[in-house]
Image (cartoon, rainbow, N blue to C red; front, top):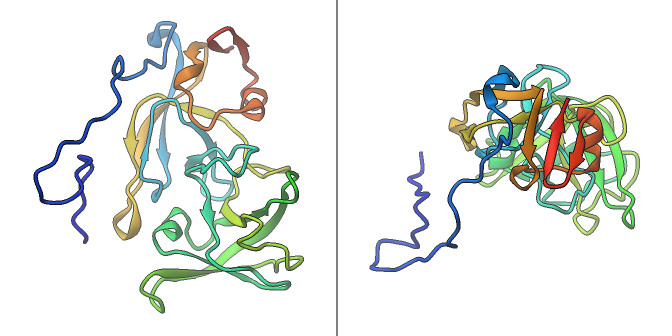
Length: 232
């Protein structure tokens, strides 16, 4: 297991690292948390630290929660795993960074997406058949069921994939809002996280929300009012 630090240090040498100054941790609730409908849920492993206010979706196979995927797939969404090589027409595998491969598991349903001049193309790859993390020291080969429909899923087109968590469109539907910081783990030692999530009857601060977009607003059946998100 590699030794890591989250202290923002750049090595074992005297240094001074100044972070941005602010008012501290952003609050999520404008309303009283005690009156909100809050549920206990399990988040799938491999996504590292997820911040308070992260939009969450539900894995279509296991029911575990995963980060919601926004409509803008150039936003660096933590739920995405980017292909490190082009995916050919008829291919049934995608090469990922090994660490990214721990965001998924054999049996999960995989979604592949590429940019198409601002109009993304989505492909339902079906179930993940295998994940080879042993052949290469840095890459993982994720093999899936339904072959790529064309040769356009390339690095130049921002090809990436994620766990299916919705029935149509981009196959990711926002269902909950994370109400505390959690660590789901990353890489080989990732185990996931138990947490609480907000479902409704709450007024939240928009500025605190992560992976939030117009589709998430619609999925939640919520409304915006100034700087607030109202979950009915």
